[in-house]
Image (cartoon, rainbow, N blue to C red):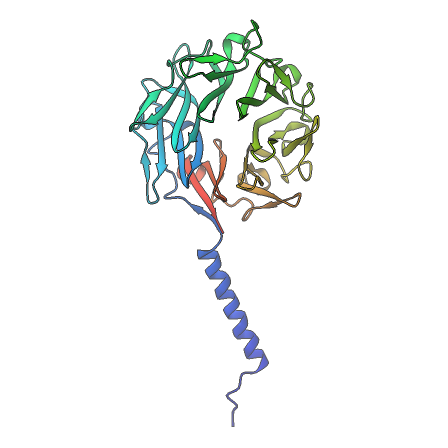
Length: 376
């Protein structure tokens, strides 16, 4: 008589099948990078863009080619992407965008694509976009990028000013008008030379700015406004090994610890993250955090000030990778190169309530922007 009892081989076979089913369910419904809404969220091609997440709501501001290359801001309402105000709400074509959301109010900085190319800042209030101060308030043209930061309700703007030899300049809105942060009667441009890839973080009214300086072989440099003058934070000859690209800076509110990230041509274009200790910038974890060249690196902190970096990863077919530090070791968040196609420019990362979000120009969507978030 044949026994109805399971053999050891049958037991392990069933266990293996159940394990595979469980893994499949986790991969389909569990942790990983998921598209927010639909991929390719713009109605047409885009130019420059900027990204921010506040209260679980992602916002994307971009130069909208479907609306005359004017500025459009969209947000995800939990089901769909929708316009914040009208699409293409600026009066002229625009370039160089930076968005910041403070207490649920979106602010955007941009430069008009006209002969003067000066900067303006607007905020969305009373269901419409309004200028903060006068439009086109900068002395000179915006030559490179913009970095907008709102600190305790006060907007600050950092940019490269053509009138001041393309040096970095910072302006602050005092409630009535925009004012340069400058030492006495000196020119507002405070960087040693022309400044590229400008990024700013502000602590209690004191801006910290990182940039790539043309007078120092395009190395990364960090400077701080102390209320009277600008001074270097770290080596005045540059804090990178070689030419730095896509420099970004952020800080942890607890203890005001600062972190910077960039790709370093002195290290074969790999991504680097450093923190400021004492008087110098030191690598966070290993010196290079990418396996190969890392384009468009962007740094962001989580709710407990843990560091995340997103970048186009040459080691994985120029797709998007995100790494997070854990006990001084950098690990991939999800799979490396997790996007279905190449990730082009406009790569940015934000972490809101412990959830990382990324945006990138998506090859599979005709280079329109796609937003994804990491689900545990």
